[in-house]
Length: 119
Image (tube, rainbow, N blue to C red; front, side, top):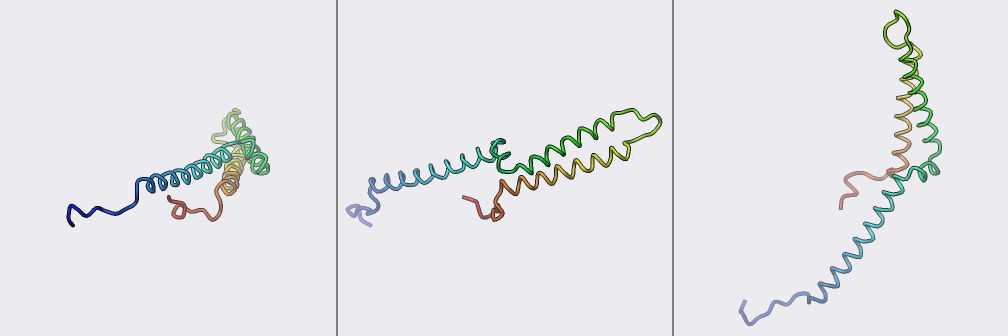
């Protein structure tokens, strides 16, 4: 290639237009992600959207508090938690697990997988 031959490629105006278009696309994507983040972390919105999950989570917390109280009450010579305490603790942890799965199922779409959403 001689020095007299000039490289023919995109003009600076075309490159500036392409960059502006890419920035516009990125702005839309960032706005959508910000909206989804706010919706996922807004507990009032989640309460309106998933009242059953919040009721289950509230019941699980109440059961854990009751289980903790049962475990703290002195029982004389008996060692370890009572049967009622063990049952309440088991029910509480199960309810929290179920509530977590219900909330996760609402927040994360079913078709989402880590390999499909990479940018």
